Length: 306
Image 1 (cartoon, rainbow, N blue to C red):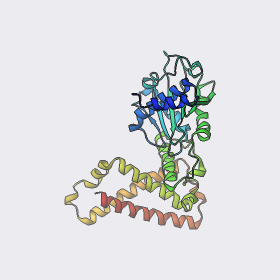
Image 2: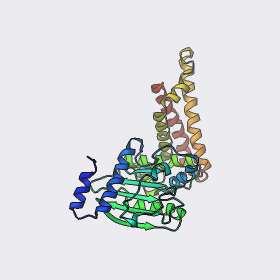
Image 3: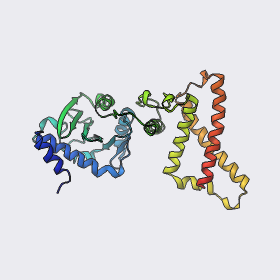
Image 4: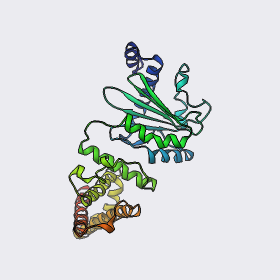
């Protein structure tokens, strides 16, 4: 039996339109299928992208702003063309079957299942977003062009899908890291961000000043990268390690920590994320102190990892 069938039956019993009930159940099933490759709070490709898919994915990634608990899938034509609304629901048809479709599906977890389905293909006769909750069609947003549709997506997501409950410290951390990593990947600072939920922009969220918040961000970015690629770090730390003196090992770890940290600080400087010129004397002193402290902390982490 289709695992979504009980939901469909319940929604129809609740007098929801069978067409929207079945379409939402289908979208939910698609998201369940892609769940193993999804990253919470991040727009994630549902499959490997082709070269022609990348500009569209990057445009969406730069614009769409997700709260940490949302699941968002980017579907290129190889997947999106297979996901079709019911033939009886003409109002949900945004692109002809023979045209290459690009869809973004965003699912908000919780008791009241809400899901957004956006058609952002330039070939769509009606680019836009459809919103469903518990089998009901809540509404739609239609746009004239792909560019306008993509630009408006963050407004729609923030109003209709964002996490409304009080955020925990881990939520602020995940949200801010995602923002920074998008800047690195896309090579631009023009990435959508809600500054009131980013501890980099609002360090009081984590009870810090802006210097402490900067180094917390850089440290956590590096920690995340080491977790994702432990073998790469082990190789850097383990070259001829058995033949090295303990002092040289310590120097190597420290030098590596400094290099990693300086690389990220160069990113911060390149994109003018911090106004270093207007630092007060106290902030300059704090910067030096936090740089040295973070290097020691990273070096110690490397020792444990190596």
